[in-house]
Image (cartoon, rainbow, N blue to C red; front, side, top):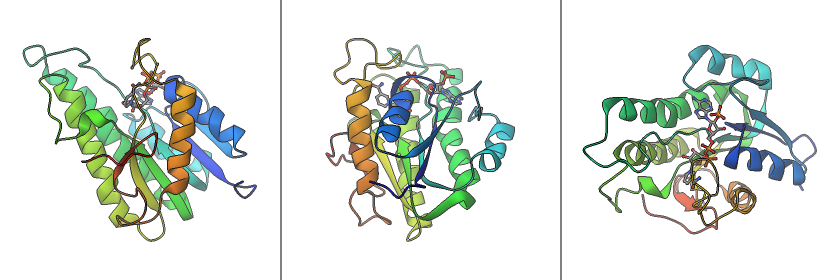
Length: 215
Ligand SMILES: NC(=O)c1ccc[n+]([C@@H]2O[C@H](COP(=O)([O-])OP(=O)(O)OC[C@H]3O[C@@H](n4cnc5c(N)ncnc54)[C@H](OP(=O)(O)O)[C@@H]3O)[C@@H](O)[C@H]2O)c1
């Protein structure tokens, strides 16, 4: 059981995995704030003003989860990939993640954890001939986690996570894992994060079931 004031911020919690992460955190006794693009606090990670306002709205936290993500080139091959798809993926999945962590840095308590919801599709050792924008953006998101883990140690632990193939708008109805099961595993993974790259999972991408994955 966390201390009573343990507080988590889940960015991108309107639906899917983010909404399940909010519910699971509350079930574990945490004070959880979930952001949506039109709620309170409202955060669009591509909007600098809304990201800048976040620390003032939220205050100090023990856990920050960067979950907001887009998959603009789902099912798209090399010929179908546009610059706009590439820009959108980078803007949300990379720039948005970094902007949120940078803005929230002063609000991270001693011993806080930062989790970046990335994807196994960003593993560079497993190339595939499709989804170029999404794969590149998630490779960069995992890379951000590794570098932030070094930058923020020993005060803060940082890790990247693959949530599984999850039944959400993004994952589709045939996906293998429910949002609830993914959220349970992810919360266990957040709890296991330790500062730096040598601790369990920190700076290394792990699956929601705890399996370490290659970069
Ligand atoms: N589902 C999977 O199988 C799977 C697998 C690997 C990784 N992931 C990753 O897991 C995360 C959550 O995925 P999901 O399946 O739950 O996707 P989803 O159902 O499509 O939900 C995406 C969430 O991100 C939010 N979002 C998108 N753009 C945003 C922006 N500019 N600012 C703020 N919020 C924004 C959405 O808010 P709105 O409702 O306002 O659009 C929504 O809450 C993503 O990072 C995704 O890449 C998912």
